[in-house]
View 1 (cartoon, rainbow, N blue to C red):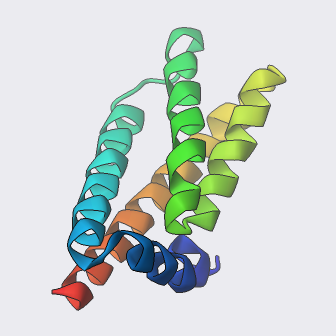
View 2: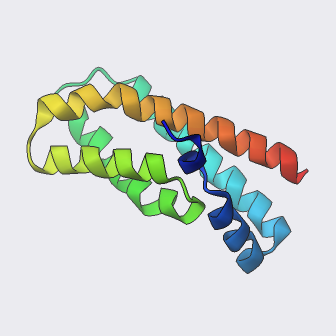
Length: 119
């Protein structure tokens, strides 16, 4: 898996230039907290027809926020799962949950590394 696409540096630099260093630190923290909430939501769920919708909403939310930080792998996985859900391809959707969790965790780790560099 391409570690570069966990958080694309050029996207982070561009966003930081737009909002300023202080705001960027706050944005990174908010994004990390958001991802940690998603991890908690997905890992605590026993996947079934009722909880699948909640995971699909999480994927939809990720598709909205992750691109702003250059989180390409996360964006792609969330889009793939969103597509599976909308096409009612539930076995494929369910199989992708572990991959989503892995990418979420790795992205949070990358965010933590980035925050350490910015301090």
